[in-house]
Length: 209
Image (cartoon, rainbow, N blue to C red):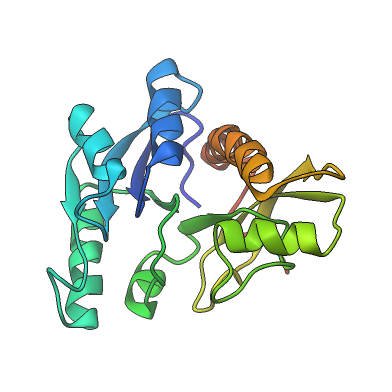
C-alpha cells in the first residue's frame, strides 16, 4: 500500500444516485478531516445528483454507462483510463449500483472499496441493496445493523471486510428510520475509514479473511 501518511490521498468516487456519501467525503476533504481530495467522480446515471454535486465543486465528472459504451469491455477500459488520467490512488464506490468488472478490479488490486448498509456477511449479495436490506434486517428481528466497508472483488458484497460500524435497531424500527440512521452513520464512517487507510492504520494489503 502506498504510504500517504505524509501526503494527500487522491480519491476517485463512483456513485449512482444522490451522492450524499460523496458530499460527506468532499466536505471532509475541505475541512481536513480527510487529508486529500476527490480527484474525479464517475456515475452510471447521467441525471444523478452526484454529478451535479461534483460540478458545483468544480470536480471533473463523467457519465459512463451502457449508453456511452455499449461494449462492457470498452466501458471498463474507459473507467480505468479516467481513473488513471486523474491519478487516482483509491476508488470509492459510494452508492454505486453497478457491478465492477474484473479488468478494473485487476488494475486496482485491493484499491477499490465499497460500503454496504448492513453488517456483512449477512444481508448482502445480488439483489440486496437499499431498503431491501433494511426491510430484511427488521423482518429478521435483528437488534443491530450497521455499515460495512469492504474491498471489492468479483462477487456482490463478498470482498474482504476492512471496517464495520454498528447501529442499534429499535423494537419499533421502520425502514425509513433505519435508513436514516444508517445513512447518517455511513457518512461519518466513510470519512473515518478513508483517513485510516491514508495514514496506514488500515492496510488494504494486510486484511485477512
